[in-house]
Length: 219
Image (cartoon, rainbow, N blue to C red; front, top):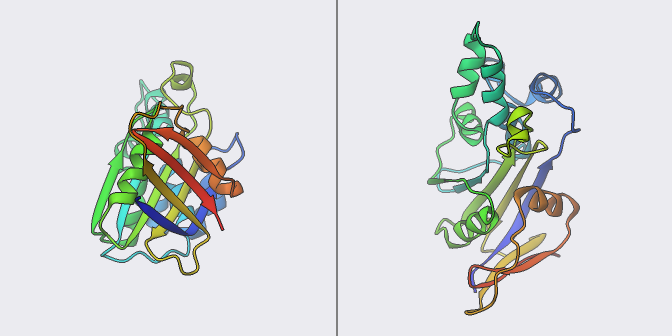
């Protein structure tokens, strides 16, 4: 039974109306000034969740997002026909997790970027559970869309989370597991927003899917 023990959890769930400019004012002291101007809303939220976490070159990072920098792309397209050079830079800037790692000049053993929708959480969890690195950082998040949300291609809220997991139970605050159960019927997989809420509120999650039983529990 693959399992990992949770040692750090932090979730960013800003007010629904927060824009990137407001996030810069709220979180600006957490990032180098030269990098902050080009960071996306999602990049800032992810960086905040990693506050106080010292990454090491032997750590692995798993990153999950269905829509990534949706709002950054929307804002750039909205600047036409006088396309904004700054918004263009932001829209093609490295993804949220890369913004954080580059800003820190932080190498890691492996980075697993994952995209998907219906079963993205399962993909992210199994990647973290099977990753050989002793310590894995599981990150996820979204930006809040506007007109792309109306088309079904964006999140209805902005959020981000960071979870540090290891195989050492000492001092752990929770545990994530997967037990194989061949033939078990798939249930609806929680989406990223549901996972973020469970992490923030320390509530248990369990469901069946991908040939097994998933659970996240707290000490």
